[in-house]
Length: 294
Image (cartoon, rainbow, N blue to C red; front, side, top):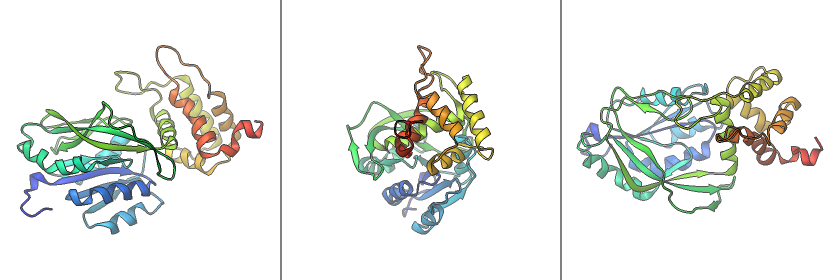
């Protein structure tokens, strides 16, 4: 903690992750000098995330929680390790700009201990990269703001499994800032995330507070359970997909739904169609039906 900094002004970086050590390294190296503490919630990664993070800085606390397809449960875990100050909440594929990092202390000071505002949103700058991290596209900031800096209060709690929904703020006043953060993702990331979203809660309709489960949601789960009785959560299925040579019954289903039509005006099946692209185009193009004749 900076000399002379009062407890209510400390900044805790909070992040959840699982088997994305390169992302964690990028984020922590960028932010460590601007925060007083880091709480990393790790879903029992097997890529050395916990070991690296704990050795990187004595500011870092790594708490492990088994991933159960609930973002709310994972995020609530970090709240067990925060009891004052401000929380900087970032996904492992997000990185603050220098301007954003340099603005944090003044933003906190101007909040008058959270009495003027308790929520700060920053502007997103999406960046597309390839799987090696080389930048493919950076078109600058977009008109999307995300709530990344939160004044801690004891009533904070996440309540929705799929999307971040934090309630219990002592002060709900929000300010939007022009400083940016970078959301760094590849096509593979995008299709993996869309596959994960479908697996967890199906279709997220506009204005909904929970996912809608069309028949195809149940069908995918049924065929996966038949082929792989040990799959319980998306990370289990993802491991099978990354390993390749999926059971033919699962492959056949992904091929069957790759061109499934939406029921207008809702785009129900965007994320279901993403499974085909994720598995056959990004992970294992050698298994693509155009090449194998399946």
